[in-house]
Length: 367
Image (cartoon, rainbow, N blue to C red; front, side, top):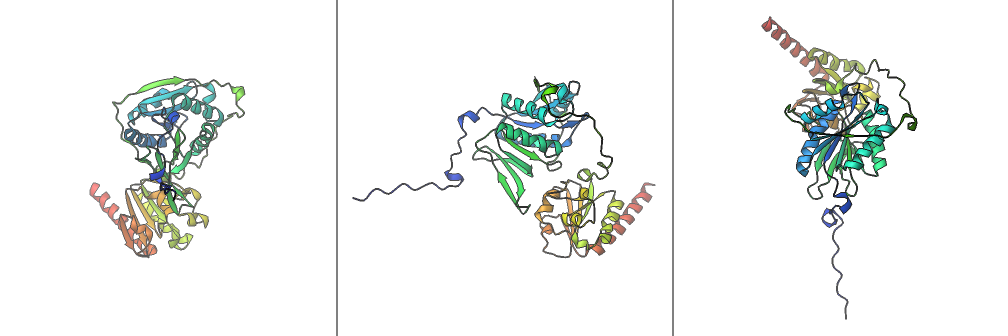
């Protein structure tokens, strides 16, 4: 007698996997943002992340919390009050003398202690120098997953997990990563990737104070002094309202000056693609893209730029994108709002002259 046929195996994809969250992880609730601050000022990426956290929490039907750590006399409660206006519901605050100024060891302990005590489901940090350093240490300590430099955050409807999208394979692809079996789910996002949320001055929230339990002798590093970089604010590309960017289509560093001339007329900044920076045409601080700056200007003029994904992820959130390229099939025309098929070496001077004449007429009318 023949044996009965074996039941068909389920496919290995999403339809066949068990999306039920392990019982011990179901206690994790809420979306948290780590509030990064320095010398009395909160980094704007924290507010940008709060807007995104609010959307994620509303999808999950949960609350938004913030974690803010600092010295004994730092205005953390003031930061919390501002966070409430941007969408936070709860603030978890730790004051301690050893938290005066960022050091990895005490901040890692403070944040991991808060997470273990209050069990947020999602923890977001800015992909800044501080955020990248802290996120890796916290994720390692908590034995959980971390998706870095995300460009988009969503909730997967099937698993209710954080779906974090980031560039991969050298920026040639975008992939979405989910941490299904560990909590919290962690992600970092670069400044200016997410829009600033609207403030609601009437919103308030709950403040919960915690303790650190460390003494100075427990910490192997010492913060001796802060010496600011005199040139650090010389090029403030991520917060420019107008950016004129050039690519290798401008042919030479001498021709690249056309971008500077137009930006000067418009009162804007100058950006560049990675090949231009590598060729030494402009400073590295002007690079826009996956390995450079993420920008969100009101106007972005891309001259001689093909529009590869490595560059696109750094500027596609601009309000208006104007592309200038001799190739009508260049990828940048797929997402630009306005396209000019032409030689940037001819178009940039023409634009400069047109704007000069326009601004001159405006000044005469005002006078």
